[in-house]
Length: 631
Image (cartoon, rainbow, N blue to C red; front, side, top):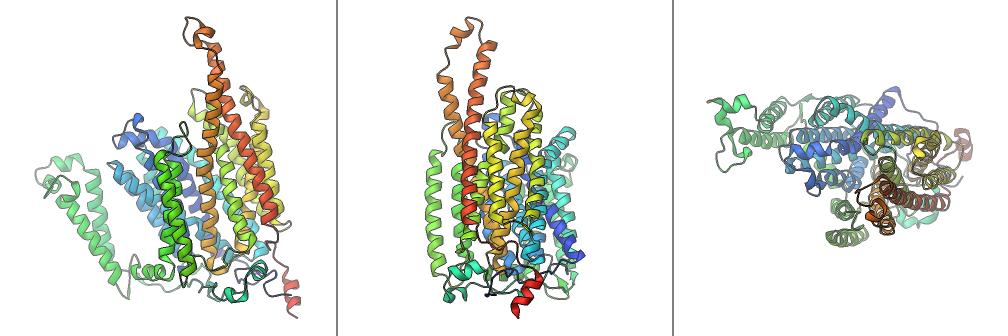
C-alpha cells in the first residue's frame, strides 16, 4: 500500500477507540458547544429588553447592532487563531479556557449598565463559545480513526443543532418568568459547571505527540515532497500533573469578583449608608471605576494577573499566563491577527447593512476594502513566514479546500430557512404572534440533528461527496417547495413536509464536510482546519442573509409598485381587507424569491460537493487490510 493511502490523518491506530473517560470528555464538550449555539439565537428574543436595559429605545435599533455583531466578531474572527492554539496546547485546555471566557462574558453582559460593557461581554461570549467548536471537532479526530469518525461527528453536529433549536425556546421560557439578565446568569452558572467538569478530566484528552506525520494520499499526490516536510508541526502535549490551586491567586480573584460585582450592581441600601456609601464616591471624575471600590477591583485584577504570571510550583496558577503566552508564541500570531481583521471586515460589511435599502451599507465598502487589504497582507505573510498559520500545502488537497467552499454555500442557503420561515409565518398565518411564528421553524430544526446523525452513520458506508450532495439536493427540493407556498400553506399539514425535507438535507451535509477536512489535513492542524469550516459557514450565513434579503425586498417593492392606489381599492374607508391581502401577496412574493435563490445556492453546493470532495478517505480502511498491506 502506498504511504498515506487510507491512513487516518490523526495517527491513531486504525480500530483504536476512546476510553470511557474520553467519551465523557467528548460528551461534555458537545454539550458545551450546544449551549454556546443556543446563546447565538437566544438574544434575538431578548434584544428589545436588553436595549431598554442599557437605555436604548426600539427606534435606536441601529445603535444596538453591535450587541449582535460583537458576538459574531468574537465567534468567527478569532476562530483560526483559537484552532491553531488548540493544535499547539491541546484540546482540553482550550475547552476549559473557552468556557471560562464564555462565563465571564455572560457575567459582564448580565451586569452591564451601559452599551459599552454589554458589547464587551457579548464579544467575550462569542470568543469563548467559538473556541469550543474547533477544539471539540479536533477532539473527535484525536479519539477516533477515520473509518469510525462519522458517527461521533454526526452526533456532535446534532447536539450543536439541538442547541440552536432549544435556544429560542429556553429564552422564551426564561423571559416568561424573569428579565433578560436571568438568561446570562444561567449562562454563567452552566459555563462554570461545565468548565469544572471538563477540567476534572485532566487525563482524558489524548496525547497526540506521536501522531503520524504522513499526510493523506490526496496531499501526497498534490504537493511536491520538499513542501511536505515543512508542514507537520509538533502535536499538542497534555500534562497529567496535578497541583494545588494558588491560594493567593484565588483570594485576589475573589476580591476582584466581590468588588466588581458591587461596582456593577450598586446596591441601593449600601449606597445610601453614610459609611459604606463613601465607597461609591469617585476619587476623581464621575466614573464608577474611579470610586474606592472600583480602584480596589482594578488593583486586585492587576495583582491577580501578576500573580498568575509569576506563580511557581507547588502552587498552580489559576490562569497559566506563561503557558498560554508560550502557546501563542508557537503559532503565527501576526498571520492570525491579519486573518481576524479580514474576517472582521467581512462581518461588519454585511452585519451593518440594512437589507431594506441595500446589501452593503455605504460604510460597509470601507470595511470590505480593509478586509481585502488585510487578506492580501495575510497571503504575503503566509508566503514569507517561517512557520505560517496555514502550513504550506495544508489545504492544497482539493477535498480540504473544497470542504471549506461547500460549507460557505451551506451557510448561505441555510440562513434562508432559519430567518425567512418565521418571517413567512408572520406574513401569513401568525401576524400577531412572534412565538407561534418561531415555533413553525421547530419542524425544520427537529429534522436537522436527525440528518446530522444519519449523515455520520452513512459516512462509514458511502463516499462523503455522495452524502453531502444528496443532502444539499434534498435541502434544495425543500426550499423550492417552500418557494411555491401560498398564503394559506402553513395552515395545512403538508407544509411540514418541505420543512422536514430541508432540515434533514442540511443535517446530512454537516458530518461529511467535517469528516472530509479532517481526513485530508494533518493531525497537527485539525483544530485550525475545523475552525475554517465553521468560519466559512458563518460567513456564508452573513453574506446569504444580506444578499438574499435584498433580492427579496426588491421583488417586494416591485410587487408593491404594481399595486393600484389604496383609494382605488378601498375608497374612502382607509386600509381595507382587500388591500391587506394584496400587501400580503407582495410579502409572500418576497419570501418566494429568497427561498428560490437559496435553492439555487444549495444545488450549486451539491455540484461542488460531488466534484471537490471526491477522493477523501473518510471511510478509512479495515484493520486487517491495513496490517496485510504492511506485509
